[in-house]
Length: 422
Image (tube, rainbow, N blue to C red; front, side, top):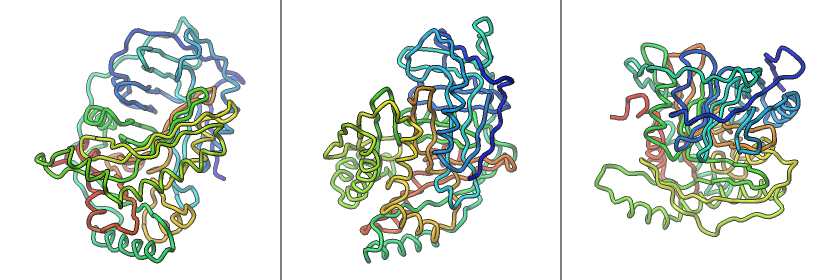
């Protein structure tokens, strides 16, 4: 197991102070021009994190859970708003899709400053600060748009990818596996380093109903919440089954009706729901799984969606639940071990932290973990370049050309943010 810890505590214990603040305005406006920062925002609510008090690099969610438990027990928290969901010191993370087959590393960081908003409550938390040192950081003045962004291809061409989809369909029809989620990538390169704050602004503006995330070079706007744990309640939103608009003349109600009747999409969705329900069951005293999905409408696509809820005990935290749920059939396939083997053999792509858990947890085990979809990754060695990802669930009735078009639709949010949507 890879593990690297960077601490900036300065003593065996650390003080953290949380105070109520006036409405700070758009949270993303506090992200600095340089230095580490994080964000997790939906409909204007969530948080931004500035700086790092501690950092843990690993290849296992379980190891990160143990580390955070140890570290959080060293923090003395003085709060004006105890019990408010999401306030106080938090750990923010982004984890690899398949740690056994990736050269990337998972990361969990503790921001030094957190500015948040939720349900009409506004707060700031600072680590290493007392109440007399709680001034808000300065807001930024401007962010730079990408300079001459150009798509330069990915790990494989579209023709090769569709051929691989056909191979997987044959495996499924021969009963060797039930479902496999295949991804492809697209590299976009600019003339100057990309300002991820600009991309985040565009994602928040264009896709407010999604969870916009920024963690250690991973950025995107995902519609899929792996889980939220708040007190004894856990919620998981399962998305699988997709339709998209091609042109402004298409009636969205007609598209939604077609999606709700599509046996191919219903079958794909049922696999994903079953995998999440089975993974949650050992941790829940009671659980509710709706009999039929709803249709989630986003600006460019629609998904079949099911919200699963359950009650969990105090000893099962959000990170432990994320470890139990990942990877679900929505991003991997089923049976899981067979789908992972097929992805590794045929996809020709290191997904890194794409389709892995991304989110946060607090000192009490509450938190939110989404799936890192509709996004991309910028690496320190190539700051002018971003690797975008998109995937599609392959089942027996899949048409390779349709699945390719679906991945194209899922690339749209990031291409729009980069100015390449035309």
